[in-house]
Length: 513
Image (cartoon, rainbow, N blue to C red; front, side):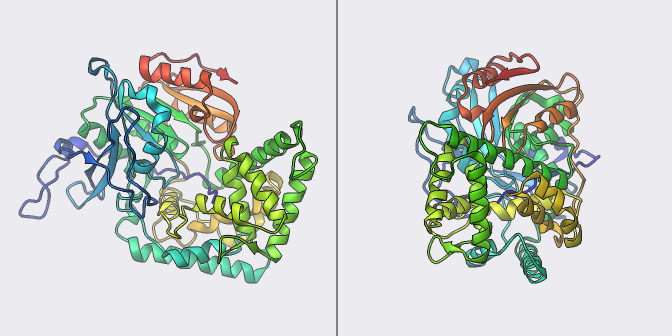
């Protein structure tokens, strides 16, 4: 489900990694330097249930195998000699001339809550050019997947949770939503109490700098996408002198509160829906879901209103509810490549079949066809709530509904009510928004997509400005979908590859179309 972008916490005191210790002494503290730990790389197992399940990653096109390892990190960075947790890593070793190898290129694909250990192999071929000079590396951030993944409710409970009405129309529906949210949050505390206070973005950024040292790199070379841009910005703020070549794609606006982020997403998803409707009706053949852009959106609105009263058969035995349909439509707007599935899903729904829209919604929620959920949503909520200081009351949300509806008649209520997800959270949030100022950092290429629904284009300029003069270098892609590099646009890829591979910083304000 679309959620407000997280606001990262920023602590003023930076723990020096060189003082970290890792084996146990007589007093229970650790006396080995964690930066000196050796990673034991071996073949990768099949993804865990928390990572989404499935098969072990296939060999790379050149026959090389993906390798996996686990890195120890302090559970609590304020107590670096205390307990540790394991951070799951994956890598593909550089394929080119060893003499031209630059180092490791670390990826975070966003969420928060997405497993980098499963995502990197899925998209590895897209980064083949970068692999010629880098080891491609990704990880499950703390609280995610194999890295002490947050657990909340079981699969059956999650099915019920996602079936509920997330846009209440009356007092009874509102009470049900709030009670279910409170129960979900209580389950998270019950099952993951130890890790919940330690999944902030600043914690993950410190893990990344430990990772840099353990991998043997003097500089952090980084490719962050979506939430990964916020994580990268927080890293740059904490460790500006170790930033190497870094790219932020699908950029989070770091200046916004969680409410402002949710309102921005409402505008972004509405803009993407407008673009979808315009594209469908402008083609030479008839658009099967409407005659004009307005007709497409009006028919969708009528469908959602009908589903609010009477759900359709979905993926048996579950039904397609209004909330699931809204979620599925949002998922399809993440990429122009998915627009055909949105058309198919809408056609089916108009004929009384909700299966395709429900499968799209399941994908957004991390549900596999076997009915098992990854921990994507629990980790997303845990990181958001640990980062975001704001706690919104139901009365406050109701007062803001007109503004959200003005931003998006379709997604406004859905995103506004999403703001209560942290109201009863056990751990206090750390900040209103992250500090990403990074004076002294190397240039960071910031890539914004004009049609991005989840991280609206305006955030790229805000990130560039917040990083500071001479650090943030903005590049614009005039396109559709979430992110730019994976659009296969040659101009974007040439600019990104030119910087990461050869150190050539594009001119600020470069536009690719």
